[in-house]
Image 1 (cartoon, rainbow, N blue to C red):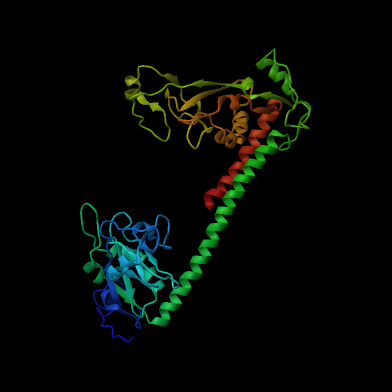
Image 2: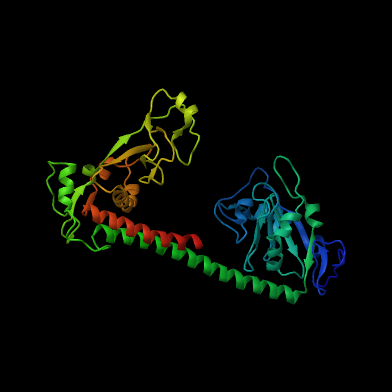
Length: 403
């Protein structure tokens, strides 16, 4: 097919930006043999299988998505020939929240149709991938003249009249190749970034594991043995065997978490609006006055989250407030280094998260938490471990932030 394109406007006149001499400004209408949206089969006449019927939820910027795809029969397809999709078409969402999403139909595509929320753009002598890149550009997003106050849409006329910077065909191909090269490089960088983030998380876990096995810092024979520390916490405590922890250093001992700390339940907040969903507890004088009951928590108190994806996470309250049922207050015995105990809890967070109890709202397994075996070094070694962990974690966090 041979066509003659009429310049929309010379590149040196009132155009969005200057283009090279070998380029020209035209309109989308002038470079397309088809611009048109589809329609929905009468009575939503879908089939269990047959011809794929693409709706806006099937069109994404990187591909056509077949999740939740609908089908129409061959008979319905023949009645909707005007909405038929061909290989190398561009499918553009023209209404609703996904307006502007655009995908190139694969070259090996067989047959399909689209709904009225999707526009078929069939270009002539324009590389589909170049057209696709233009649609995904900031220029196209800024140039779309969208109408409608309820469900926004891009009218066909407005789409047709949009300016199109057209390079020679061979340059379009070079542009597409260059874009693919850089995108492939970016994908490699992103994958490398994800891999490094995973390695950093694994490294942190390994450091904590070394710490509680006495392998992170050297021991000092002059340190008071941990058993003396436990006697102050609970004079009647009877040392148990090392359980899962073998070959602990001299001066260490093992105790269950319930010996070292306690958990205090919060109160339900019936009818109370929580004003800070990130912190998830009531705060401020206005909220306190509305409460008929509740447990007061001071600033810098330790709270452990008992439900949700972050169950087992511990944080210090930045302000005073009242403790709700979403949390348990954590009290760590003063004879223990609280930061050391928190690191042990942190090491067990995945196990706590995966073993929640309750069918309606799964929550922290309090019994499992209390039974955690805590390897206890001498108090001074606890301090050295915490200082080393903080130093290494700070370096790892700097690497993570720079990614």
